[in-house]
Amino acid sequence: TVAVTIDKVGKSFGGSGPAALDDVSLDIAKSELVALLGPSGSGKTTLLRIVAGLEQPSHGRVLFDGADALSVPVRRRGIGFVFQNYALFRHMSVAENIAFGLRSRPRAERPSDAQIRSRVADLLSLVQLDGYGGRFPAQLSGGQRQRVALARALAIEPKVLLLDEPFGALDALVRKELRRWLRELHERTGHTTLFVTHDQEEALELADRVVVMGKGRIEQVGTPDDVYDRPASAAVFGFMGESSRIEVDVKDGIAVAGDTAIAAATKPVPDGPGLVYVRPHDISLGLPGTPGLKGRVRGFRRHGAIRRVELEVGSGLFEADIAPTVRVPVGEKVAVRLDRARLFASG
Ligand code: ADP
Ligand code: MG
Image 1: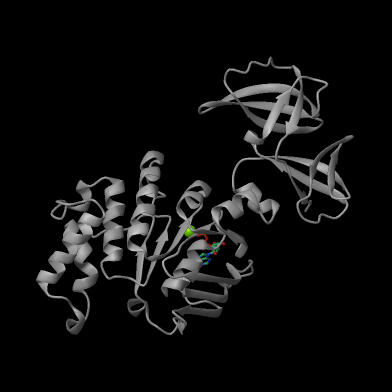
Image 2 (image 1 turned 180 degrees about the vertical axis):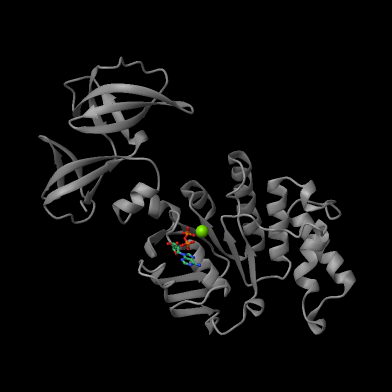
């Protein structure tokens, strides 16, 4: 069942620039974890704020469980919100922070003190911070603070959980740990969740579905495998990871560089100029004269566990990942094979 419907939502902040959101439509199923992925400025936060009710759209509709949400005030929408730098109340203990949403309910809806205490204890345990209720935010690590922020968002039993780059301010290792942890938490609690990130790895690992955004529009919606393996556009492919690009001529759906056919279109691409994209791990090297593009090794860079080799091919530059044990001298001629290249229409 659909929990949240975003229907042709647009937003302009006035001024002469393009709209922050341009007719965005999206259905989020109950218990689904959807990642909004896109570069900075693509409209992710604006969309999240509209769903939360912190911002009104210029046009379009937002429905929760099929009912209009835009006329429902923020406090009544049943939203849990976590921001990148979620300001926990510094002068309140962890337990008081988590209890805040429940305590500030109107008297008739407020649980008893005993109920609140028990709920806070449950939430502390859920976010693996048993025994931390008496601490203050300043006494916690960044990762612990974001877990408290999440517990605080969950305290009101939200219909929808909105997370805006919640791990964005944390260092890479903590981020990865929390990412896995959040996925497990989601599997246990099943909150309908909209998660904003500009980190494709994070989106691919966390989400049931990924919504790739660019310049106020949805570029593609799909499972992590869909958007990674079957990108709808060069923009999506480019955004999903590093890649090299080469200008080609397209003839009958085949990309030709010089006199070598290097890629076939997976969907119709008009004859004429085109662009082929390939990821560093989808390039392999062969001896000169074997099948492939004629290339020359320009240099190497260390890249974590692998070595990245820079290759000149015609006027283009490719980057390929090779095992550290492979030794090819700089200046050497090689055959460059594009193992899983993708052809897109140019422009
Ligand atoms: P993201 O979260 O993807 O980085 P945002 O939703 O924050 O993107 O911004 C989308 C666009 O809307 C940007 O061009 C941004 O400058 C603009 N924008 C966002 N909030 C405001 C605002 N309050 N006033 C004017 N422009 C805004
Ligand atoms: Mg943002």
